[in-house]
Image (cartoon, rainbow, N blue to C red):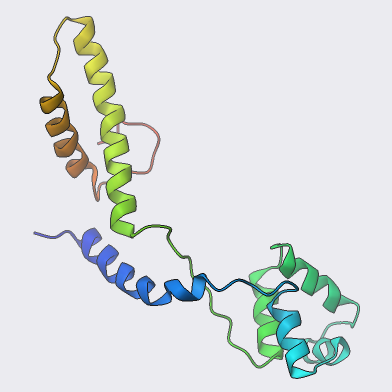
Length: 156
């Protein structure tokens, strides 16, 4: 049976897959606002009027975009003034399933390290094969559980 979380990750991964190439497009050197404004032949005064701000504000807005300090609201206002749509999304570096599986394995390994350490203190060793099987089993239990992303391994 596939969990609700796994279904949601799968659907979102499919949607994000279509957007991956968009995220690889580099931003123009002077930013999108300046690039589109220049391409349209729109002066900073004209953009300022369309945004309802002073002309002196436009260079500040364009610099803040270049520096990645622009507010999303300001970017939306500039997009509207340029007759553009703002498209916003987060692009995971790996599939969401990979991210969850990796985190579950990390959390399981941390948990098992504590158990293995305690077992060694009591002179009870576990074979590598047993450890790998335990890691896989415990990781599968951590997937789609609350607390997966917390640092503590005690919340299961």
